[in-house]
Length: 265
Image 1 (tube, helix red, strand yellow):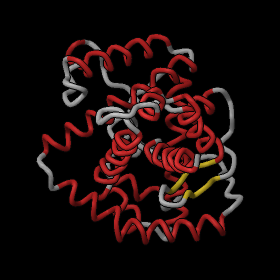
Image 2 (cartoon, one colour; image 1 turned 60 degrees about the vertical axis):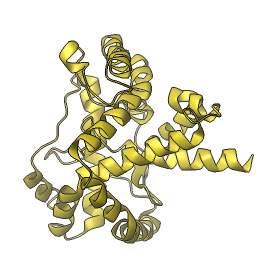
Image 3 (spheres, one colour; image 1 turned 135 degrees about the vertical axis):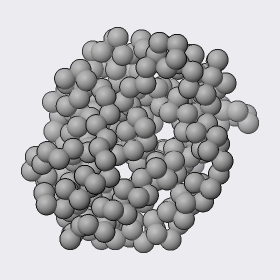
Image 4 (cartoon, helix red, strand yellow; image 1 turned 45 degrees about the vertical axis):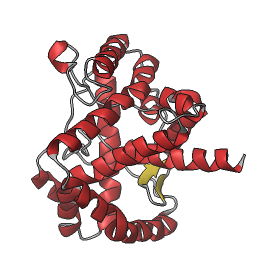
């Protein structure tokens, strides 16, 4: 029982962390100022943010830098695998948002890349008429349904979130993630909780690796790094939800120079 509870909590944290990444494992950003942010727990959030920064500099960032030293083919293959697995969450959220066409496209991507693409290590689906779209999650679906973000949160280890997105993350381990469901009930070397957590950890490392310079630039150009990250996270999530509502799922990632714009918002 305790083991199950621990796995559930860790999984929620890992999923929440990965929810911050766009379809190319990069943060999305535009220059529009986000709506007013409800930072109900700012004092506690800032303490947690400081702890996360120390942890990132001591452990997570060095691991991400080490990951970058791996051959490009290994990094790309790993990213392709975790992106392929993310379709298992994206597809049901496409359906919940009423976008059956995208659900079918992403299902096609999942089938083609898992088979022809050798368990997702090679993205061959794009060349076969199944283009790559933005990832979806239950937090985005709740937002598309009109649920507000609620209070801004900084989660230990994982960083920025809000009440809506944290609730959406719980949906994954409560039955909304087929990969978690299969792994948690598996008991072999190919399907187990350990494999599931490893895949989520690799996704998080890949995300951090792809955003080293971007986050460094943001910190360097910020008077208040905490406020800048808060603004960035809110923009990123609003962009994803608005894109869904417009039926436009293209990534909005801009040049790294745009990170400086956050400081004035």
